[in-house]
Image 1 (cartoon, one colour):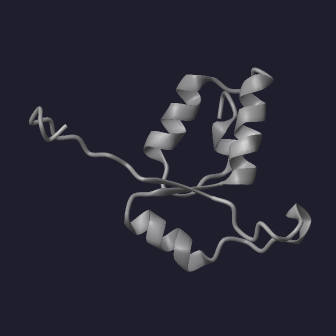
Image 2 (cartoon, helix red, strand yellow; image 1 turned 30 degrees about the vertical axis):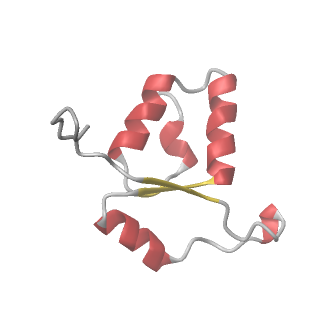
Length: 88
């Protein structure tokens, strides 16, 4: 982009697998300070669990590519799987 003198505002997305050594049901929530930092920086945190559920929604035709891209480009903080559902 710099070579072609193109300026774009690129949003950061952090995909994390917190507490990966714990079973899903025993994992702690993402710390509030991390979420606040992501909001302040205009970033989106997506847990691997949410990423896989989002993919499942897509495979089951419960969401679309456009909906996914919209959520990824507009939301900040911690991604909520309900945001990816079609019609929401």
